[in-house]
Length: 553
Ligand code: G6Q
Image (cartoon, rainbow, N blue to C red; front, side, top):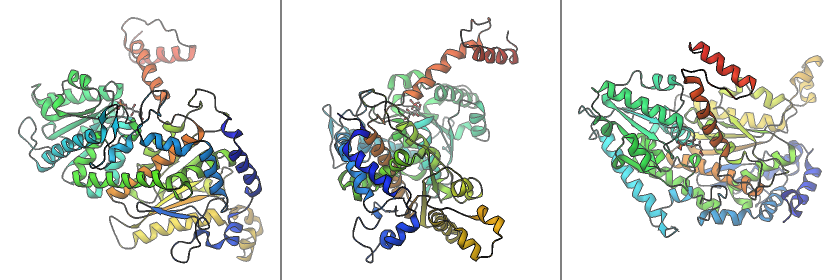
């Protein structure tokens, strides 16, 4: 089988790139003014470069593409068997080859009327059984019926987890705070730095606090350390009676043995499955804190949003398929324009943790350099994703996006309606989305500056070359449902890229490495006897320096 860059579709696309790489977005819009139109005036697909699904309006017209580009990108995806791989995922085949696992986060949001049999088990039925238990538990806590050890109702929920067991829950909580039960306080502890636990609990009463310990493996150093500290904190505050654990701790895990060893009754455990990857788990029981915050019905709305985007991704031809288009455009810049990073800029304060969440989703998934068969790739894979909620970034790093030497494709995410409407804040906010994308695309020419009377010496400084690509994603309102659709949109964009690159987007051996390395050094930092340090001189000296600072020899 030829390598990706040897396929005929890739070569055709490379030729097309050579022809249009230098064409400016000004020319592209001049030659095809309808490319950004929607509604009845719009030219037929693929002449207009906008698409809509699951409540997301996706304007990709400000990209450095012509009407020919997308079909050529789709041909690359077809030749790389991306549609077959997509079907294999939905069918539950073990497409995570290095871990020999199915990849079925899409089953987490299938309606109960569906069924999907994997190894003789109906996974949809299992998913709904857990959802039912989560709902019952959430109702108990939210109604005040679930009492702590001393008989007080729960007022604080502390989620303990890291990586995929933290970033999704905290992002979703922040995003949907406007829908949350405001008399419950939510905190998220992830870092093994004791400061995280301390600062998250210092003002809480253990008698009113519930810990949700989220760990797929229930062995992760940071989470287990924080969970043990939480147990000590709780017992110390409640008179040391071990029975208190049952009323103040629940677990979300696939490891029932580990949960019960820790001392949590498995009756208070919510399970999930090895076919749910950590970074794809916010809609599994890992989302228990989300459900506690917004309630079971809204959690179901979020799942419905995910599912609607799943169905769109599964069934729509690639050239009208939102996540596929987004993924293929990312690949277009990464592989043909040599871009190294991509910015995600949500214009909603509620989405301030969304870039961090996406960073894990994109970079842990596609930060790979061997193919599924284990061969070194000879093409670039995952870009660096980063971002910040608008408009804050405009007052810091946007300068480089506008006038720096690095080409950075950007995603702008905006909402038509504010969740916290105040005066004309929303108009001001969204005007910035439109203005930034417009300025990035079209820039400002020296001639325009001269016509404005700008001093000649300042013209180069004030010139904006433009031709900087952006996507604009417009959504009516940030709701549980639209959040689900938005997350699924990015999940499937990541899938599309990984499938074309031929890599395993669902393993994370780099994370596993970190888990092993630290465990080796811990005893060398703590032993009373001088340890025999077999590291390089730099690492050994750093360890000795740390020991001396602690008063050890
Ligand atoms: C996600 C990764 C990783 C994982 C954490 C926590 O895809 O696998 O971020 O979620 O390392 O792992 P546990 O849930 O097992 O504690």
